[in-house]
Image: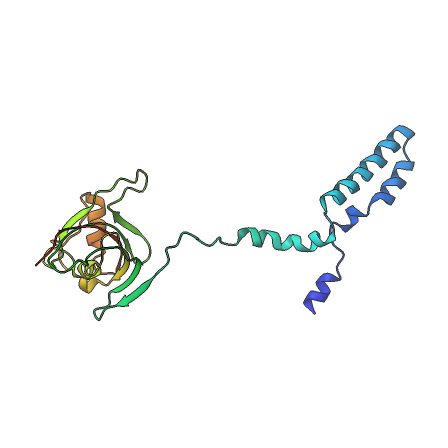
Length: 214
């Protein structure tokens, strides 16, 4: 019912498309010079609209155009997840790139890049500069006495070149301020430790296994 009533309303710009008769009548009341100009003006407008393919269909569609233009564009750069894993302590892992070579194990000395965010997406710190692309990788042993347990579990099993994204609950996060990785700058470090009681999202890429444990 609503659609039929909408279609029964004359299109708002149909009158302008079908206006030449009225324009011609008005032109007769003017002198010959002005009459010629007025007719040409109206006729030219009709030709232009016809040439551009503008008709009453666009008039009906016009209200929907702003909504279409305002629709969000999907992010085609979102990495494809090739595997997921949920650990008993609540750590959730997504594999993005598998990597190559041997798997990292507990006790290995590893070099990696990471980006840390709060669970709401708020940026905390990164080892890669978002403008220059320069990186300052972290080098740490896979040992829960030095590294937060959740991140150790994320890195364990990764291969060089591999990438993972993980949600790390606070119970296996920064349970004390001596655990790493910690940004060097005071601001990010204070922000990180002040939100130690909430989940964190880490995106990591394993660069090297420097010392393989026996």
